[in-house]
Image (cartoon, rainbow, N blue to C red):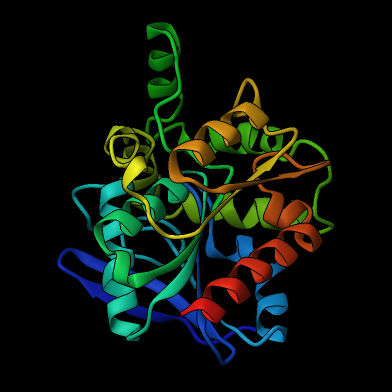
Length: 270
């Protein structure tokens, strides 16, 4: 179910992506500190349902380049717009964590490119943290410590069920950040602000589904956060039991059916 890695040229480097299947596009984008293989369970389901699944690494992550001078929601949204323009078709865009904010910003800036939105464990506003917490985050995610800190923290985000290949996927993620220059790119990505996305949420016009793991430890009240987002984008909420921040990998059966249902609806209306 995999295809050869392709690369999109951007002004300061390349974005890695792959294309699998035939049919209307579904673009899947991983969150900060993750790889496009996070969607390894969703891609076969989408292809079997008659869609073309496109997965892309963030800049400075996976097989994408590290020569960029800026990272974050707005930068990723620009990369996604360029990718969809190169592919020549609008898509249902699925974004996890930070990439959910990028997907929402893309939908506002380029509504012609986004048929529908799926925001998974979405960060679309800055969390409320103290100055001490922000300092600890900055120190822990500094380039020399980033891979070690992420290796210790990432398992917590998989509250609930874990994929059978969790250990292997974790090893792939950490190995990717131990390559020269990638820890620094990851560190810079952690310093992004979601304020530009929050300011534009009410301008999202694409049909939107907010998917949140019921056990997501990144939010004090995951259900309340999902409802807050859905209210602002006029979207629907889908809560996933036994899942944390990565419900698409933890309960792909439930997430795939929800994504396919939205894709079928928006493409039927197109």
